[in-house]
Image (tube, rainbow, N blue to C red):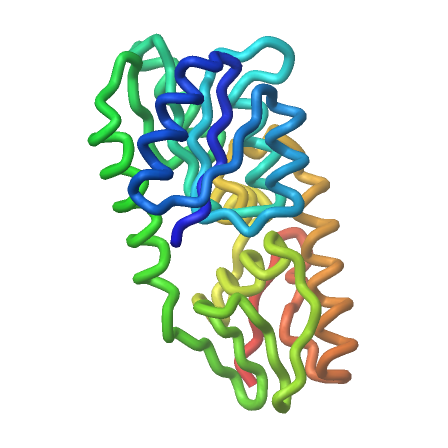
Length: 225
């Protein structure tokens, strides 16, 4: 049963989307504002987010950027505008798909299912291994010698990305773009803080192994041992 967060300030649209998706077996969470959406996303294990672009206060693009700081959950934007610039803004903020209003509920559900299935199919069963270190992409769990560490969603994504590309040096800009999926001007400091936390937690989980290496003035790489 997929868990979907619907974010829109229009109650009529929310009601129609909720009714249709619930009939198909989805568990549906509702938020009428960006602030409310972020609160729900922080506590619920979501499979996807349907996000209206044009909301008062914090708009959908801003919400998506905030979500991308902590999660890679698929995001489908809804908007009354179909301009190329608006689509680009949404995709650069980390969105996965874009649907213009008015839209078909059948198409919305199809896009949701495709995005959710695509994400799960690339993760289920795949485990990255380096000696006793295991990075389980399906369970989103980091283990060393059978003991699991406590990594946030974003810390896990950063570690998994580096481990997928062992020995390759990635600049701060490249990591921010590929892990956060947002323009680097959104905050270079974030990647440095996240990398520091990943290394600290790895040191606690597997002392002395030093899997994440800082390459001076260049970035980070995952060391193959």
